[in-house]
Image 1 (cartoon, rainbow, N blue to C red):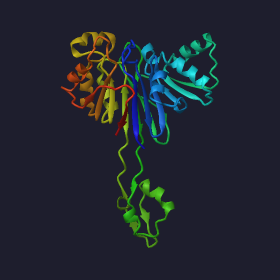
Image 2 (image 1 turned 90 degrees about the vertical axis):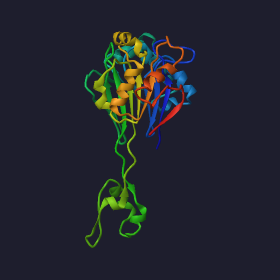
Image 3 (image 1 turned 30 degrees about the horizontal axis):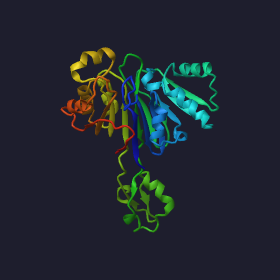
Image 4 (image 1 turned 180 degrees about the vertical axis):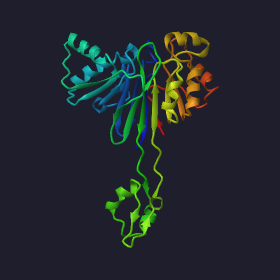
Length: 305
């Protein structure tokens, strides 16, 4: 199963005609994850032809408006569309109070359960897990409490070597699960067939790291090491590093340094200041340090892995 990332919005605080604030849709192992929900996210979801009913887990990095102001409207639309299944919202402590206050004052009746997973730890923690995927927080250094998120497939089962297996009639279909999980197979005469003969190596697990608003923060490097794709904010070019530090942001050059030190496969930049009309200057700067750097393309589904 393929993993696709659709960047719905990648601008900084102010929406423009051509770019919306931060929001991403991640389709991984048939799970649908929404990452941040800036203003206009549900319109972008419509343009990307994402079924709202697929989204059961929303991850909010922090409570600045360009990352969460689209959430009340999206949840209200869920209700109008007849949703009755629970929705999980992960975000900083305070997100429940913010959302429930809006719903109370606007008399918005959801009609379904919203489960808030409020975060306050300054250390990385696992916040979601199922049979195929794990999600971890990536603590960041912004002006307010902020997390990125690491989405990682669990190790996959080994592939059956059917050419070798067919040589042994004793191996039945019911044995395949144990073999794929790494077990050897013992024949009736006591001879043990090593698993390395009966299988081949599994496909490498896919991983994606989302680093939202943050200053240059090398503490993230061990958490995102060797990920297939890293999205990292780069609000300014490096000649405005002082402004980046003051406002809690990163330069394109610094994002590239993080990508290089973490040995990631691909870097996607985002969260650009509106002062820049030509965004190619960001890749020009970053590629001097990390050549495999790219600009986001709104609504393009990027295959990961």
